Length: 192
Image 1 (cartoon, rainbow, N blue to C red):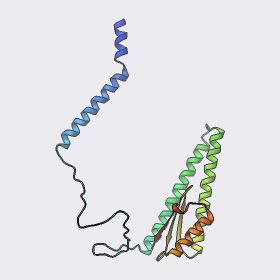
Image 2: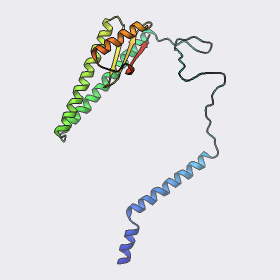
Image 3: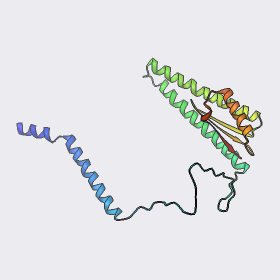
């Protein structure tokens, strides 16, 4: 009886499971070795004909001997803005749905409910401010605009025929009139 009990202490279920996993892992490594053989992985090597340095800027519309001009037609940019609006609305709806599921989950403490209500207020505030910025930019003459806000950054997408520094300053001014964001965390993207 003592021998059987001592044997159970040495070889238990956990040890058998660990040994089984180790055998399966070893078998997987062996099979991988068999199928891989001596194949060598090819890596991309830099092309000596192209010289580029970090930080070099290449414009999409730049025309060089080997570059192609990429233009987005009006219908493509219309589709982009429509799809972007749908994606933005979908992500906002999902985040609100998650917050509502936490709120109505029933097992939250009063402190957790206070944090959830703060999050709901923040999301609704972002939605309101994004809408206001988009409408103000359209009123200032931009054909279309999208605004994405987070707690410390802002991304603005505008449709223009060529964004100059005065327009960029105008966009920044409009944005900073609605929300306090560090200037280095503001991104303006132009869609033609």
